[in-house]
Amino acid sequence: MKNLIIYYSRRGQNYVSGSIKNLAKGNAELITEFIQNAVDADVFEVDTVKPYNKDYMVCIEEARAELRAKARPELKHKLDDISAYGNIFIVGPNWWGIYPMAMYTQLEALDVTGKNVHYVVTHEGSGLGGVSKTLSASCKGAKIGKSLAVHGGSAPSSKAEVENWAKKAVG
Ligand SMILES: Cc1cc2nc3c(=O)[nH]c(=O)nc-3n(C[C@H](O)[C@H](O)[C@H](O)COP(=O)(O)O)c2cc1C
Image (cartoon, rainbow, N blue to C red):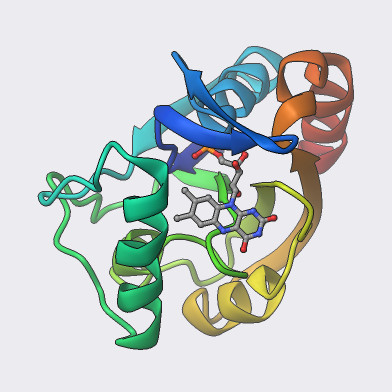
């Protein structure tokens, strides 16, 4: 069975270790590349029709409003058939405690029954937050496997750790 990575990542302005930085590549995007190299996975990017504001401070308010509204933002492309895959890696940032709402738009549209789901959360201090809980709720019937929290500022130097983790996850 093949491996699949479903990720969301936001390039540009982000808060890293106490200050606003401009990231050419998002942290979850970087982690996705590490996993892809380690286990030879196909990759699907979750992306919203409506872009988030480039300004970090505006974006966090947009995200908070979506969280409060339990929004399911519309996606540019939606994956619908994952029957070829056995292991599904979910990779995304911690936004106010859980994945960006767009991730749930995608996950709720999939039949993950019997799949092994492993997940990574990039963050600035909150770790996995409430992701374990929301993932179980949106991946009904899946076998939730290994998790990994990666501090955003450490993402570039996490290659070996992420690769080892991913290899163990697929067994
Ligand atoms: C809208 C928004 C909300 C965030 N909320 C949190 C949070 O609640 N806790 C936390 O530790 N980090 C939070 N962060 C920081 C991100 O989780 C962190 O920078 C992560 O590495 C970003 O990954 P990315 O570059 O792949 O998007 C937030 C960032 C954004 C843009």
